[in-house]
Length: 544
Image (cartoon, rainbow, N blue to C red; front, side, top):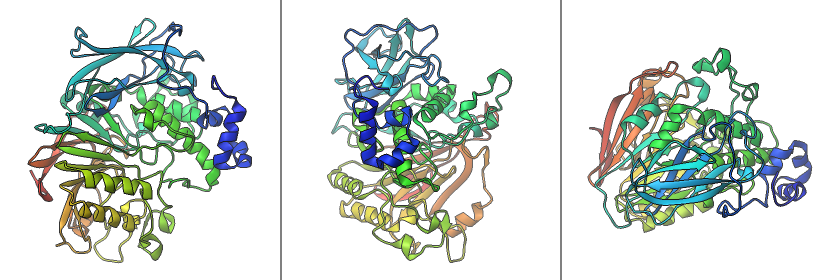
């Protein structure tokens, strides 16, 4: 419940979105809270608040930072002394949380400090946006609540506008289903890579039920999970508890503490293959919007996102733009919230007039215009799209007729054509598309005309594999030869788990595809399966 505004007013606000009668069939405290209208300002001063006393460590979910700007970065934590309880073991009142940033890991040279408020309405999450930081600088940060200190995190601000950093180094990650394997990739990412940021491309969590034994993780005895994880996430409480489960993973916490994260969602943060306000299954759309509101709210509560990304009912503006000096402009896209429903019943289908309708939307008209306007104004060497589903065309057999994925850009060819025309009109320099979703590593050339293999290459697509989703995987999946033969622009394909290192400089883009041999048991080593480069001004992936 909120401290200001009644549940009745919240229900009236929700009814405007979904229709009161249908909303009342699914509502409860969690649904009302997801649609709450009179929520506290997250920038509220902490003056006069009582310090909390915690019998146990409240920083069980770790700390994080994100969305680096030249003079600012988001700092995040959420207080949860009992993370598997619905209230996380917290009192139903706001509590002060003190934060500080330093130039050194021992906090002898303090750069900024202050006090934030952890509100129960936001599940006692804290989002701090310190300003006035030095551009292109490493900082260390931590929080204090009551007598407890959090772990220490390292973050880095973006380079100053107009400057040309020698290089930028990002890690790409996606798809971390909890019950299908250990997140060993994050352990290596945190310990071995010096990063400007981690770019997470979606499926941070999965909505499916997690059994008491946690699948491939093999929880037994006293480590069995509480029963409330053994159901699909639908309510706000469900989603909040699922984030608690995921963030208890020590490898994920280490990766969040090692570098700032830039995040976008795909589908499983809400529901598999949903499209805008349309659910996967037969749930009425107005009822699905209640679920979407809960999912979006829990996502914001648990990600290092800024105030403009705070949700309003079932809506959250996730697309945004980050600049890294003259070297890179990073446009973070949302291909879920504004898309038309998948054509032809979803799945892999032979295209029809319905799927080929040029008016079909994947980004929505407003986001498309925003992207095109940003490209026209860009003077960056590299123009990078962080997004979710495969952009380049993929055929899954050598001879036609060729089924295509209705959930990816292949199911929205008119939207892809508009994006390519916008890049062409802006005379865009060095387009790089970053993708997750498919649980494999791909390296693809983006062709101006995918029907003509000799067509001009206008960019490259780097698809990163899953962290754990799909289990161990294999270097050459069963369809490896078919996909390589059917798609001449597919330069690399590996089906193991891991992450991707992306390095940008004035001369080239380099993708190092990192893989682990297994995730169903812990402790796997990491190796570089392959490295590809694309020269600035001459797009196309070539072995390094």
